[in-house]
Length: 77
Image 1 (spheres, helix red, strand yellow):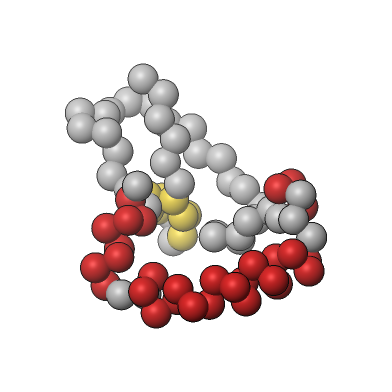
Image 2: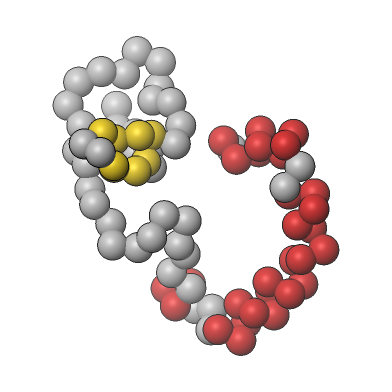
């Protein structure tokens, strides 16, 4: 089985953002990435700053819905 799970490292501990698969145990590999948590490489996705600003502006109408507590269930998908 090979499963990647994002997480953070601080104070000598790795904190996963989702639980590992049931029964998972054994060796792991931790890779430190240079991008800040939650950062998206827009250039790699062929999105320039103007396109990103336009998209951000058009999506602001959904912010209130996305920030509702019951929407957290969708984060795990």
